[in-house]
Image 1 (spheres, one colour):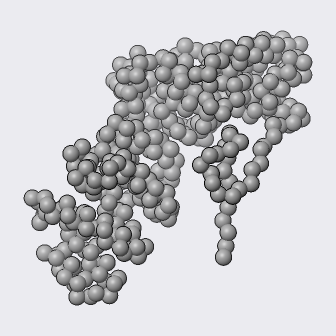
Image 2 (cartoon, rainbow, N blue to C red; image 1 turned 90 degrees about the vertical axis):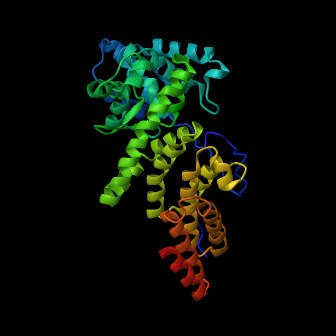
Image 3 (tube, rainbow, N blue to C red; image 1 turned 30 degrees about the horizontal axis):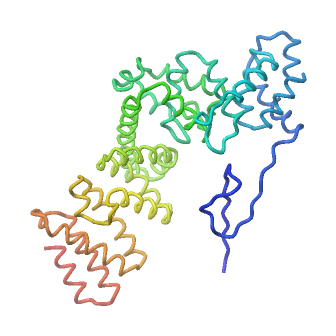
Length: 396
């Protein structure tokens, strides 16, 4: 008899996929007083200014400053990126530059639903960054939600990165890079070695990196990102077995990047790598009883592996049979636990049909595991003689 509600946040006034009855509320822009208060707090943290006292006063109270706040409509991210620039340039210059960039933006330069002034502000701020930052920051387009300094360094100090980007970056250089992005308002500090990425940034940096590099070069970087996160996922699985709390925290912190790497691995049909990447996510989802997300993740992967629903016969020729067996096996186990007996029976029969057709069927422990699952199903149906036969078969 209870009710549950969900809060959905969108940049669009309507979502065509949302068919359920719902209420909509459009969050209004901040009022002038709130804009001024937030702007003051941002400017307090931007460091010493190189402008004269008179110019500094204009940059906090002058008409161009107020017009600039109106132009960006008190948008928090736009303010976070733009206002640090006022320590170096007068508000009138910044206002003129951003207006010009807004006018010059083409359709291909804007993300659907994104305010043009936000793209213009980010473009302008990015153009003022040091050359090294402009070269390497677009690589952050690979990351989702967070970037960890150690993992970034693990990628940037390797040969594939150096081959594409022209130089490698060690730990110190990566720290300087991330700090420069933080000072420019592009990312925020979570801890000294972990940075939060605003959802806008992957798109913005993705546009930059696609202008900077060829598709083949971008693909090389994507493959390196996948490789490093596969190693990370493997380590996370070990941690989950050794220290469940620590492992769970690590997986949740990197959930966005593991999911990103998984998507890239599937796109590149790296099926074995995809299995390594999905395992810690699935383990944590199961531990946290996030069953709807777990089922959705598995079914999305199965759709990628066997889009025509051909099962093992479709998965094996493309080299995805191990991933198919893993996904079907975990889906079957979960269905059994939830007493969805007919569905579990169907899944186990598909698994059994494939495993029994293999030369090593007698020695493959997965065959015994399926026999055991069949016995559990019969046990739930109170067919104890049949259950015993399956259990005996699993031990043979």
